[in-house]
Image (cartoon, rainbow over all chains, first blue to last red; front, side, top):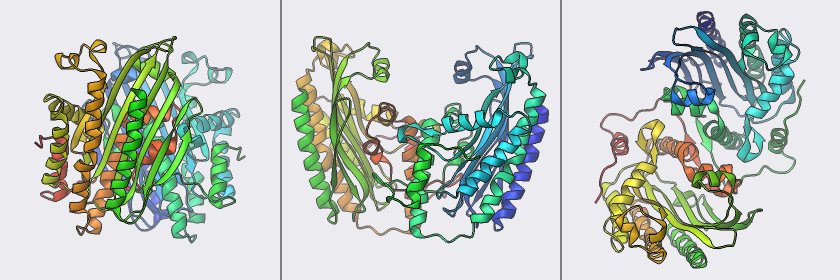
Length: 309
Length: 309
């Protein structure tokens, strides 16, 4: 399973980068191959100063070795070996009319001292962070997520949509980071899970098919939105609003995001982890959008996540 | 003691704001009075878009009530009432030639169920974050800190200078946030402390005199540096460097700073806490200064804090 999934994300990284380069039209991803001293490494691909994408990364990594102390604590286990691989992407478009997007698909294995797999699971999701709300874009993104989910289990979309709203909650601001999408974790096979009746009927093979279905839906979920909005005109005021909202993105990633904090505290490759941070950001003291403005409309939706499909 | 110290920081806030407004010359602090639902409140003063200061705050607060769960855990105590007051300031100048400065002076009390004070201590410090290193400025700042310390105890400056370098360490970047200054905490009287011989000879009154000595030294430590550098010419490239370095400031404050995280997790006034974040910030993937440049010279000093006096 680990080889199969790693093959998949290598291929997916190629497909996603190609698709995004076509949409951008002016620049290409640069690639950095890196090694992790304790085992494994990654292939980071970053785009900067494109016509459409101001900054972004589509990164894969596959790491292995002794489970770090912090992970032992998190998973409530003792010393063990592990393997983890995944694809993480964040794209910050230049235009405030084009939403930021984040996605991640990952697989994790833990071994006993004889090298037998004792635990294995998938996790991931994809979510959208607009600066101006086009309701049809939100609906398109969520409908694409739902279509991918429904091919596997009709309970997945509502469950993982809700988990996404819960996870990407900027608690200190009392608002969501964006308009959500999907978030799932600890997706385990029958004998490892007693979460629900649903989970009991699912093998790791089934989970692989589901997770890759979501991965395959990414370009379809995001690119049509980019194409529709990338040539819209915008003002300096729109851009200022985008940069202020990007500040909230930074706050979420550095204060609340478990993946980011985990990476920072376990000696991950800093530049690959923090490629998620936006290029130009502003903090303005006690900023509030005007009543009845488009900016306020966005805030209202972030304060109380709604159902898009 | 609590009334005396709160009087002091109210007066100090006035003096510092006045001094900084004179240095800026073009704009004034705006004031927001706020109340904490659970008890107490604060007086936030923020400056934005001045000739010298692009953004900054000089805030005081005095809060009291039941010790929040997170603080009970931190101090390893059960339920108790508390009082805390302090002054916090951060100033982000517009010119990359003028350093950012941070300072904080605070007092804390805890009570038993009869209202008797069972614990009390002072904490605080001041530290400088330049974007371009003028060694004489670093020396001036540290010398002013040392002079204030030496009036009270010759061991204070070396001890609190070292604690400052340790505290403001951006661990995930393996570099200091800035060039340091002073950092002290849990400054308690004889019968509450067995830390060292030194502490045993110090009363709360002595600590009050020390902490206010440092507070009184702030304008002298910082303003002459601002005056010397505020009219220097700088390029767009200098400004870009400043904005990139401000990103590291954000990273420290949101990932490592105990005060910020504590505020965010205990329902503090968000806008007063996050006034510390810089106005315009950049994140550039895998940025490294040129060999032999002024930018690289700064990095080398941040990687290995040095003695300035």
